[in-house]
Amino acid sequence: MADLWQNAMDHAVAAARRAGQVVREALQDDRKVMTKSSSVDLVTQTDQKVEQLIIQSVREKFPKHRFIGEESVAAGEPCVLTDGPTWIIDPIDGTTNFVHAFPFVAVSIGFSVNKQMEFGVVYSCLEDKMYTAKRGKGAFCNGEPLQVSNQEDIKQSIIATEFGSSRDPEAVDKIFSSLRNILCIPVHGVRGAGTAAINMCLVASGCVEAYYEIGIHVWDVAAGSLIVSEAGGVLMDVEGGEVDLMSRRVVAANSRTIGERIVKQIDSFSPYQRMSTN
Image 1 (tube, rainbow, N blue to C red):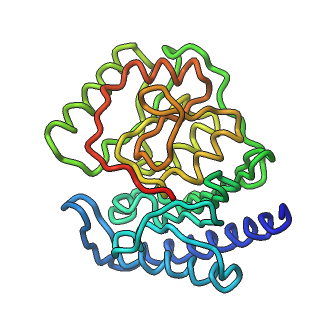
Image 2 (image 1 turned 135 degrees about the horizontal axis):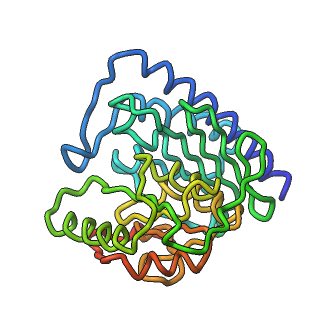
């Protein structure tokens, strides 16, 4: 069975590279922009094209596998995580970045069996960085091993977060309350790449000590979550419990010490419905 998952992972890496080429080519053309849940929740024809490219190539090789894809769900397909082999795909993580040619755009492919991540692939298209992790086998960037930062003092740390697509005043107030709490610890700084997948890979690379966000989806963090844990990091809920990737909220940190300190500063809120599992 292990060989099967390695074959699947190799296929995911190849698919991510092909998808990245489509993304780079699309950046040279005019990009037709549409909206989903709100005027700031963007989608392009390239998102849809890339997702179909990945799903079709996987389905040819693994016809019995299931899929959770951002654009498929947006089109009305169910978002249900089962025990079966499941590909969790974000064709363009950082669509707003892509629309504005802001240079952090990722293809994210996670693979789950029995609701456990078996491998994760995140391709930062414009940086040409391929992040990979396989359960129990470590995390890598372009073949080089990744290791989280060993910084245990949050005052010497950089924290990553995003503001999300909600413009509900209550949610925005909570987001800025948390940000203020963290800045006033004080930390060295707060950053955001505009993509959850790359933010998680920055934790895995040791560039930032933690990343947190409320409102993300499973396709944003499925691959990155394994990359963080295989690089020696920890994952938890924003209230400190065990992480649930379907809950739309996550803290990824280099250590439990840093993660728990972040949790204490988050002004938690739950405006988002949990995604489904069977």
